[in-house]
Image 1 (cartoon, rainbow, N blue to C red):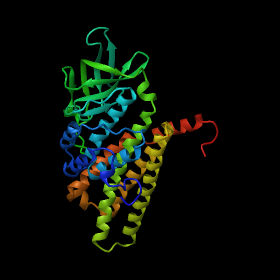
Image 2: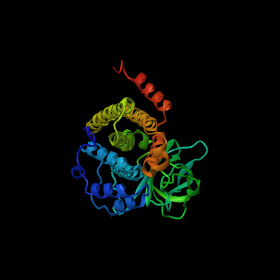
Image 3: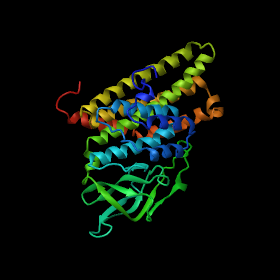
Image 4: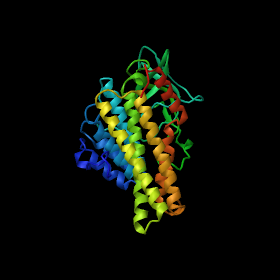
Length: 341
């Protein structure tokens, strides 16, 4: 990348697994299994946001996403789980691959109860949007408890955990099924207290990390756009589309780099996360539109990698809740003392 964010070579990332992960992402063609193998083989401490290396961490996520969005979508929750456990005073066990399942649904509900004996806390019900539940070893997930929601660590290999993988019909992130999982008295270990998961500073930090993945997907689209412009003499429209795309990425890179600095100074809260996520989601949507206008239907019909990237990114950015997230930001703005600007 020509911009500051993501410009440093992979060797400078402060994690020995970065190189193998980037190599796996370059060759995986949307298959998460080679990436999971690298995560399970890693024995080095996992990089954490807020520890002084947040920029390098997000640059790695963006670089993975620029190579393959499915790879980034596999790595990001593993790193997020490590951060959640660390914030609760625990460590992610080596040799395992983790996910984070925190989505809610009006139609499905997961309850956690403490029987006071063995195994103690158990999970019963259905959790929606559980990416790769059938391939992972464990996950941090949220469940309803009296008075709110609570995070739990759960072994996904145990009896009583049943992913419903057949529910996944998406063309985006096709090989990363994110269907519901049914729990029948599955043993779980509490991570933090009631509502701790949502109120800890790291909740906002993790949300920006996801935006770094979105950004990387947009970089991948830009590379296709730029390559097309170099293959033949571009007309004024082609130049305008390329220039707009470059401008959008430059603004997104600045936003992510500034946010990384705020995280490392413990100054990035919910409002900062909403601003960055909204900015990056918007530029990704526009990048998809630009590529469609500039490249026409050909790459979508005959370039498997480009078509998959467009489908993957289109689905991935829907983790941003559009106007609802802007409404949440507006509420935070009004809660502040005085004007934000």
